[in-house]
Amino acid sequence: MFSFVLGASFVLSVAGPMTADVDRTTAIAAAAGRPRECAAPHRRGRKPTVWQRAKTPRLGPYCDLVAKATTLLDQDAHASLEAANAADAAWPGHAGARAVKGRALLALGKATDSLAAFDEALAIDPSSLEDPKTMRDHARALAATGKLDAAADVYRTLVPRASLLADRAKTTVLLEAAFAVMGAAETGPPAELAVHLTEVASYLAEARTDETAPERGDVLLASALLHDRLGESSKASTFLAEATKTGTVPRDPTTPYVANPADALALSALGEEARDPRGAATTWTEYLAASKGSPFDARARARLATLPKPVPGADATKPAAPKPKPPPAPKKAKPPPAPKRAKP
Image (tube, rainbow, N blue to C red; front, side, top):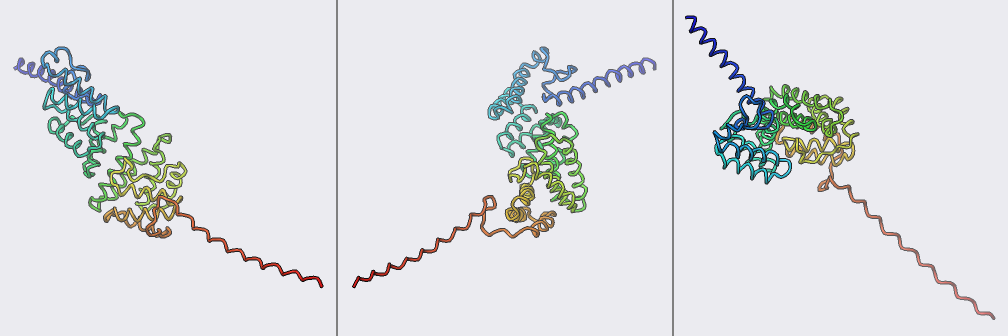
């Protein structure tokens, strides 16, 4: 009996640390951006050991190509994609190559293909997208393809890990998360709208804590839009005035952190109100045409009602052409001089 208990205790004492080491290795590898198959066990996510490479000859070339593809992402997305495809060919059926392929495709503007690669990686290894940079690109691919509910879920996991990203990326991630959740809220159950907007408010409040962020004006403008949609006109006006002072507005309709294109129009309209009220009216009208029955349409109509009517057919991005000056009145002809009288 004693020997059985001792044996069982020994097994448990060994199995526990081994399981913990495996989990820790996975977490460390993810944090380092290295796929799990390329992390050396019990070596804090370092490169594969000589023994591992000898045991699995294709592992070394595969991991080197994945690392190359990851390094090239910010320099040459085409070359990164080639390296990712080469890694997949060198050792097929592994998640790391598919994950970095998804990132490269997104950098090339191919969101649908990117999402397909991410889905393949997840099917192979559900933890393959845990690296914060990869997770962010996955969320962006979901948002770009209209899957806002799924994108919002990924951002909810990513935001607590945003400190692992570069400092300049954290504010942008918070903006992306805010607009993904706001976009998902528009099509979700009306009863959950207030809960989602409270979540958006928390993301933007955290983003406002960094007063030196390059995106400071964007954060303030987004805060103005949110509080206007919440019916908090005073707060919205305060944030809009601060945003206008930064010179950040109006926004381009292709604003990268906005998940729903209609929301980019709403941001532009807000930004134009002080500078060009008639142009703002035109942009709010465009927003209402693009929003397709959003629960926020009533607030947009309320703002539109306070602005001068847009000029039909006018381009709001260009100043109105000055009226032509009337031609000068023709000068009156002088009467001919009277003939001189002849002397008698």
